[in-house]
Amino acid sequence: MISYKPFQKLLIDREIKKQDLLKMTGISSATMAKLNTNEYVSLEVIDKLCAALGCQPGDLLEHIAE
Image (cartoon, rainbow, N blue to C red):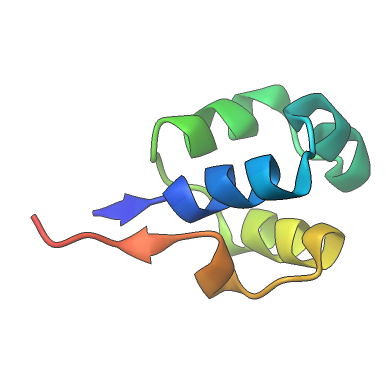
């Protein structure tokens, strides 16, 4: 399973509000909801988040063995 907990932690650590991130990246609120519930998002979304946050994909997600 892919978890976006590191993404959530990154936002908290940098004090970035999700609404501000939506404006920075142009992703939809539906996509943000998918990130909040660990659902699939495309690599294009991950790319946009990495560009906006200046990070690597591994900073946003982790694999959790089931």
